[in-house]
Image (cartoon, rainbow, N blue to C red; front, side):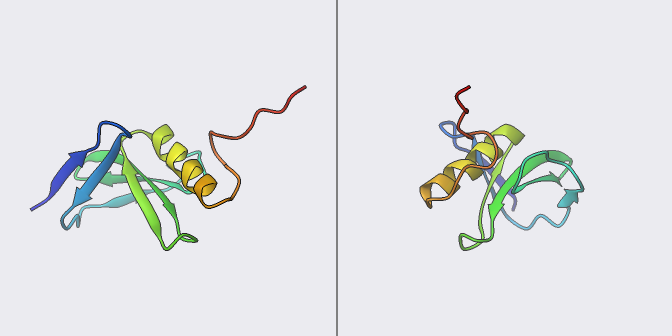
Length: 90
């Protein structure tokens, strides 16, 4: 049985079950470490970093997935690469 649960606080989607109809969309995201997936006819975005024990999370919005990648990188002491990049003072 396939189920979908949504955490309202951080907009993360929990997918469980066997999704044999999962398709990766080539060039589906403009952000680093974010992949667009088509699962059962619905578009999801996977935030994943192999460097951190194959960490991954699924989101309905591309921007939320990009934020999650940046937050995870900051938690581990790396620099943000997508949305949370520091603004340079001019």
